[in-house]
Length: 528
Image 1 (cartoon, rainbow, N blue to C red):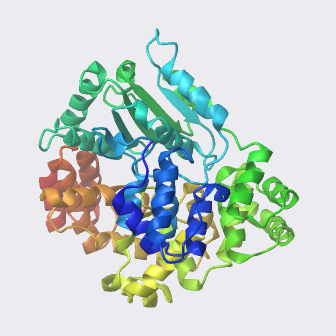
Image 2 (cartoon, rainbow, N blue to C red):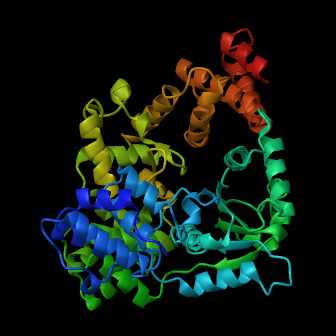
Image 3 (cartoon, helix red, strand yellow):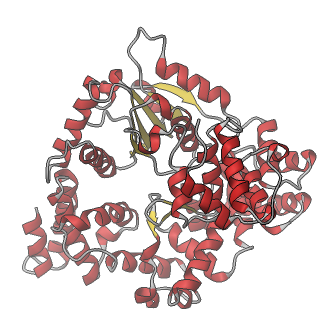
């Protein structure tokens, strides 16, 4: 195991130049402070060089990547920490030839799940004689399926030559991810996304170029062989996260349940160290040990300083109201946590969160909200959007309170349950305003020409949100221009089924509403 690189040592010495700041990041990374070298106030570089030496001797598992991940949480824009966190569980994952695409950093607060991880590994590896069977992590939303898959990938990174993440909720997104893999390994056929996907699946099936590979299909809906990927699993490993138990027909199923109470208590006390075991136990019981609820509750407790008793009382006082809005009973603790958390945010942050809740569950580009479109937004969010510094402060508040997570490409992710609760909790008078704002942001935030390859990645980001927000049924001129460009982009990158599906929908609708001779109707017909 190696230590920190020279550049990483210099970065830590610059960003954490004293014992207080250094101690905070080291504790966050799980480094035992009693084993650290003594601090020399005049020599931060020497201190971090000594820490690097301890990490190289195995002070903690995967020490450099874990430490960089902890630093990245404190300084998410730091490129050195971001690169270090992405190294994963082996040096090869960063630059030793492994093909690697994982949108999530390693979670420094991940706890428990050792039994599930061991079971999953045993199922994927088998006894060495039988063909590997795809495995599906199944459970309710928010129970930690995605994070379990992420942890597995980082823990066993050294066992694979290729690790690739595929967002499988929508066929177009899955196709895009497989086409991106084909491009990464030099198998892409220009403008032929399906052909590229099938070609790379064949490479995986034969296993000569990549004998040890892992493909993760995240948030899959109904079971789908996805261009023969499941039948190719004999050459590698396929891991699925899903809420649909129908996957048991095509894959082995690993049920992911809530955490054991002792692990819930440990997770809460890691996030909010001031909690006693008894206080953490009260909170764990109130949120029913659901991992996402525990993580957010711990972050909120640490941020606000609220007592455990007050937190539990507030939670109990809001449960009936949340249930009255139609949230499933087994999700109530999480929903109540989010409802309580909203009261800690200023109005701009609440509005931005409610705005993002109207989008689809895929990552949302932060730059959709910018000064040029501030007039589309309700006050005071519109005022905040006019000043990029103020807007970034608002975004930072939501990241800090664990209401959203920043991911690669300057995008944010809100858990789908959070989005559902926020949409349900939004005042009736505000809902149409936010709906119009979201459609306007999408319509005005795309490359003007869908035939230019440089813009295809942007359309791939915006497509799921156009579907989720109902933009396919827009009545605005700008919205129709966006849909015309979107269908062209999908067609030109080779996703003909999705392009035709959207094209036929808008053409039929515009023929009825605008007439067959309308310029947009004619353009839609030409896109088919």
